[in-house]
Length: 201
Length: 350
Image 1 (tube, chains in turn purple, cyan):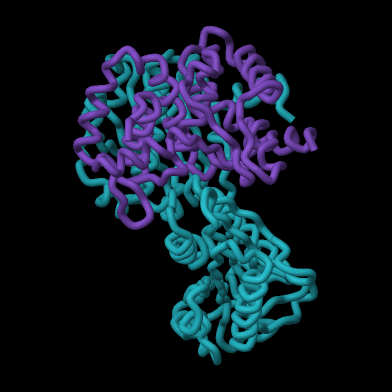
Image 2 (tube, rainbow over the protein chains, first blue to last red; image 1 turned 180 degrees about the vertical axis):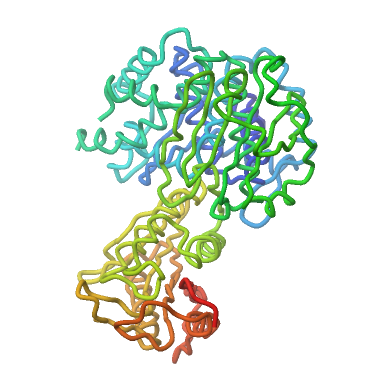
């Protein structure tokens, strides 16, 4: 099968960070952090279509991307990822491939978003990031439906833009490092998001 | 609800925003380096054992003239620091990523912060310092002694085993502590199951990987809720957790009102087996596994007026397994071996 460049790069980048900090990862961590990275690209005012692939929200309120699933499977088939005891690991060859790709301009803009998303698990546990994103308005709406729902389409995406507009104002426009809005937004979602979700009921 | 005031309040509280305001991008890099390192440190040093303080700092500006960071001893094995936890630990992360140990008496976090980002853990509270500012670490995980000691488990089994050893045995979970009626942990309070369920739910939410959804008190049939339901997202796996407790609970007048022993544990196992049978009918497409958690607070020879206990009586049941009439975990493949989690009292020497 053909490897798609953007989702493959994202899996390698996130996999590398997760392995370093958690000693391994599951596909669910890749979907979660890739979605957070995509959201952070919106904070950077990058159009959602430019991310390169889309997400759906499952009935459990989890983000899922077919492209991430296929890329992770293909990386495993080709020996870049291997599974051990319920988790995935990266091989040395995968780390080397990532090093080569990291220097390419195609990935430069998204690297900031992937870095901020993965750094959030240094500030919080993976479980806390998952719980915070559970309160994200798009995933909350997905949870209320019995089938998968396409994420980040209008009008749902407008709420995210509204949050980010307020967050930019609160942090100050001079802040360019995405790690700060990531930590602030996740904290706010964890604390206040549940009430927000109830307003849509 | 998320509004401008709420976001502004959060931004004012966030330590990384403070580090940026004081030291710019170098401050943000420093605080993330510190958080990454502190997570690694707490894999070796249990925050519960820290009687003094832990200080970790990363210089951002030149410290020349401040005289606060001269010297230090290279630390190449974090495992050795667990012995030092009682006396206090001071570590400096240098620009090459290596860590140096300093003596606790030589360091003042507030003074250090003029040129460095500083983390301090003291009496269960965590702060970051930068310049003349100081921010408490927001508490999002209420079960943990530190916001940086969370784990990520990829199986429920591993998570339950860790919870038993690290949270229940010494009642170190901040929510679980509320199950006790007395400070020596002899008697449970009335209806302690509420706190047990809350503690385990919160622990699992914070410590299971991204692929899990944890929900407390889920209805399995018309009459019985199961304590916790864990769903493995992106699959048809469902895990149900039943919690029972053993021991003696006191009412507000200080009288023992309930004493649960082996019979209670056996009843709970039967109950879980029945839930699993019902679930097969109601959700035939799910692959369901049952997990039976028994919080064991049994003590030997307690009376209503007991105030202290010897080690022999306090730990009498520590290794006394329950003799189940029917060992469901051996006769059905959807029933995990029971997780008996003994919880120790504070005892006096014999």
